[in-house]
Image (cartoon, rainbow, N blue to C red; front, top):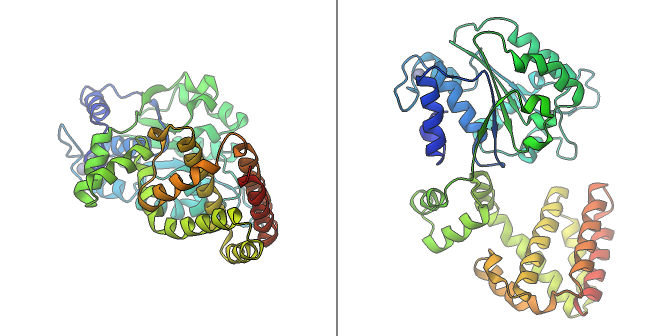
Length: 376
Ligand SMILES: [Zn+2]
């Protein structure tokens, strides 16, 4: 990853490059910022810059042997420890990053701004949380035991160290305090408050702020050719996260369908059309489980927007086009008297789906609750 491919963050890039040029590279650094701000791409760019044999003041060269391997994430001196979990329950090995390196490289090369959930989806464990276990800690120690093979510095990137349990954290404490020579530890966190304090205090803090909105608007208008007004709305919804901006744009197509399901639910609930609602539930039940979860999440967001509209705080809504028009029409019916009941019904549906309940029953139940709630 070159610094020039990291979106925005000019000031931070400048500081990181300067530290390298002046030979003050901290051995343990904690890059932290919300998902999609670019903490991981920055750590990758720094690793590449440090080890590039032909770097300029601004960036790595991108073409020396070190850069080639770094860019493909296959450099023998670049290591990763990321949260994982068992994918196959018959697999007797303790789950560690090495078992999933192929998936990790593919996921990161496809999107360096990926978030935790996207990684679990890529792994196929989206219903489980990953963790960085004591087995992983042992692997980390083992890998950092030897001097770098060919690079100036060996780099260990620990992505989401907040997923390390206490046992693993304690195991790594000494290492983070005094990494072996020519070894760098980059911790890349979305939520540093959940990392144990003894670790947090031993790493140099590198705060990654939200990406400048103007930079993101420019990407949407110039690269993606989206009209400026729409780009601004999308960017505002992404709140400085390029990762979020990517998923907002990607979900635009899927959203058409989800939007239709949402409109049908609300319209038929308002008309108290039981038979049409049963058909609605059946049709939604025929889609995949992940789609159904995405629908529920989307519907809750829409309802929140309607409620905000109702409260006359439209400046906090982010809807576009048809969605905006429909939300305006629906908003008088989403108010203080029913919003709690509605949220509860959706949360319950979500919980039952997560427990693999019968989708048709879950959505029929949800639809009937909407009939009652919407007329309040
Ligand atoms: Zn290079």
